[in-house]
Image 1 (cartoon, helix red, strand yellow):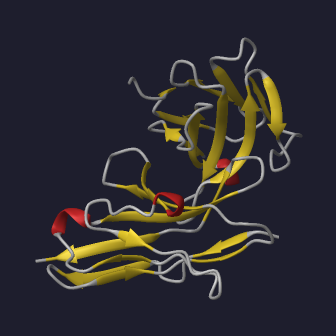
Image 2: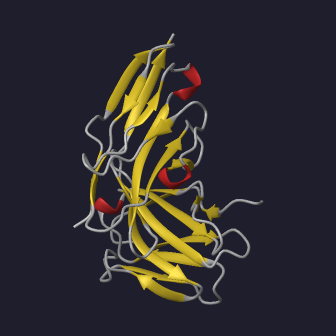
Length: 108
Length: 113
């Protein structure tokens, strides 16, 4: 069975500090992983996907198949990064299986 | 491009009543999803359409939930009768054939009292 685990419900960091949001997955095939973000009062939107290997708003995520992880990282957090972050795994039918989410709070 | 539109934004009903949600996907998007997001959890897929056909409804509680996408464009999700545990945000998303990103609507927040 496929599963996405985000162990932290809430992560609080100071502005300028590094941040890492953890995501672990279980999937028998070749995984396709995403990070979605939801800012306050806004809709859920794609932040990045592992196949693109891109950096968006300073965030990066590397797929580690050995550790079955797809952690989201940013070297210097900004207050505007405060939001809910969801890790998601695409299934064979192209639907997304989401983790429970991590609330990131960046304080000045 | 115009986003996924959902209505209503909020709905409060009593248990055992019926409710319907409407979704208008991004123009040209063949794939449409309905997700249920209970407070404190991530979105959970209820049903996936490809044009007007159902691809996956394995997690849809079919004794009370139904969904249709008659002309392969707009979709409605209905709950009849509602239970307290149906209180959640119902998200609609759509995806085009040529990209891999799913775009989400603002959601409908349902409260069952």
